[in-house]
Image 1: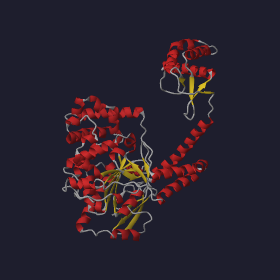
Image 2: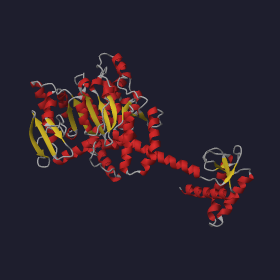
Image 3: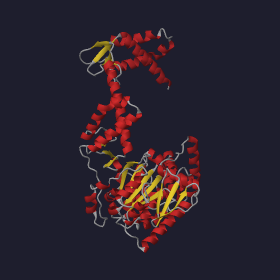
Length: 567
């Protein structure tokens, strides 16, 4: 059963055995049985295109047909168990256009109180109760509990049940000694880390949600527990981001062609159990496969996960190109398929694992633009991009929004035509490069134009700045007060002492006579041989400011001290 669902259209087209059976209006047929997890058909595809595409795949045996119908029935049953309003809500979540729940303090506090009540009822004899006895502060930390509420759409009862499963799973995987500790990369042994390679990040979708890729063909483990421990660590690392907690993630299980699971689904039950114990809000789940027999594995998953999550699932059946096209309709950018090689599953042992560890790395070239989180890249592609921005920023700044969009798109196209890509390094979880989503690239390039304008303004301000003072020769003296500098000198320490000592006297005077105290402070510092110095705009030296300027700055120090003392 092939199904196309167009989010911007109120019609659902159902194709069965290569025949267009009927066109249903969504509003009029809200309770119809819908095979919404079959192969997605593009809106512009004709009936003959769909038929040709389907015939290009392997013909199904009777056993395959039976398995497929069984899974379709399970999926339809789960989907139709929801009300029309709930189905619509889950569609909006899947496409990232749902209304987010406002986290007002009263709402969160009420949810936390309700969570406490359910935990009190359920915790007896659980690993959660063990953890609570060991360290009540750890399990009752507000941020920790809010994380579970966010992962379960603020359903207190469901969150309480998941908290209990969380500690049970954590205890089984890492032992009681790690029950009250955050799991770090150092807690994973070599075999655990080898199992991380089939779990990857792929930037964000168009709604700003993290895209979590899983390549079953890269699964390789000595023991299933290695893979489960790696998954637990990976997903908890994702939850360190509050943005991820709030927006959720989109998971893509990609088992197309060479990435088909060579373990034949080994450990899927245990994997689901671990996933359901971790409070990650899964906004969408896409399963991509090129063999209809993969449906049979999904049948097991459907029976284990909540109906709401089933409604946010889509199966895409086809080739790499077909699956990538369908994913793009959900705002997921092109996957790095050509940069990832298939590997054989264990029992080949360590050699297979280590030899393939670099096969999924995108190697940046000189034309690529590298986005790094905490520093500016010196890659030639970055230099080229900065030069383009420098050349065009005035045109960009003076133009309307449409012109700005054209300029940004033109720069992106220049980088691509030059053989470059826009790559992001995702840090500890994914120490390799992935191509950035196009919308994220546009946003970053536009930000570079805004940064260039700010830099120009700062430079102009420094050039036009006039120092009211006399340039000095040599270095500052011990009792000099350097204005605008945070480092302490004897002169700065003396000034702070005088401000503190005479602040009450200064505050007691009226506005016309306060200046006498400021003048006295200036004179005392000058009596020690000190001067009031202003750094030159180009940092080439210092200027000694006039007595009037020094008095104004001392008066400002008195006012600042008064405000600080009041706090």
